[in-house]
Amino acid sequence: MKERLRQLGPLAGLAFVFAIFTFLRPGSFPTGSNLQLMLVQTAVVATAALGMTMVIISGGIDLSVGSVVALSTVVIALLLNWGVPPLLAALGGVATGAVGGTLTGLLITRLRLAPFIVTLGMWGALRGAAKGLANEQVVVAPDSWLNELLNTLRDDRTWMLLPPGVWMMLALALLVGSLLRYTRLGRHMFAVGSNELTARLCGVPVQRTKVLVYVLGSSFAALAGVLQFSYLTVGDPTTAAGMELDIIAAVVIGGASLAGGEGSVLGSIVGALIMTVVANGCTKLELPNWVQEIVTGGIIIVAVALDRFRHRKME
Image (cartoon, rainbow, N blue to C red; front, side, top):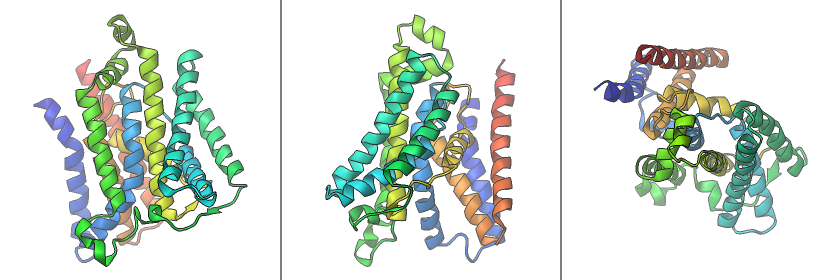
């Protein structure tokens, strides 16, 4: 029962925040168009948060995901300019993220470096690579169906209810949820995050699991880059600056523990929605950006404090 209540905590928080802004702005906040807008705004962070969920469950952290998003948009734009089909261009962006994740995982496991330090270094290196490839400017790309992933639905596509990018995010959430719940790799992630030494003694391939986790984490960040490209319609090496904090915050608000061994896909999606609802609600109330940042920061601190309090009670 306690576990179920813990899992329902983020949902209760989302309902509470949504109810507050509905009460304060009943005419503009709970409208169909605004709800769709919030889902679109959530899609990028939530997609990257799926990968971060696996990283944090395994006891790691990845500060480079914002840079991966930016690098992915640049690679996609360059490939489209070179005449590569849109699908292959998108796959090229994802492959770039996977390569970065492989390098991160190998540095952490082979050199036994702290994930915080390695991913902080990759944060700068990948951002620099994005700026170098783009020649420190925005890369304009030709129009393609990639631009429609997060655009408002045309009249002939209203049957879809939501933009394709949102459906893509939901499908990826089901995929990651199934991986964590039903596969050996998912069980290994939880085992490594709960107690790495015990997992190793039980025969879990710890190093291989960690490398795979960072490959998947960066790949999902690159998929978020595909959605970000759709939203911007250009390759921008400066985009997603600071997004890594939003992504980590979404996972933590959703109930994951920074100590590892705990986390869920539903919680991460709800955490991303909470942050979007707060930002959108503050905008509807015409509050300045600095107020939004204070409120978001406060929510993150409360989420981490609750996690620490819960672990102390368990001890």
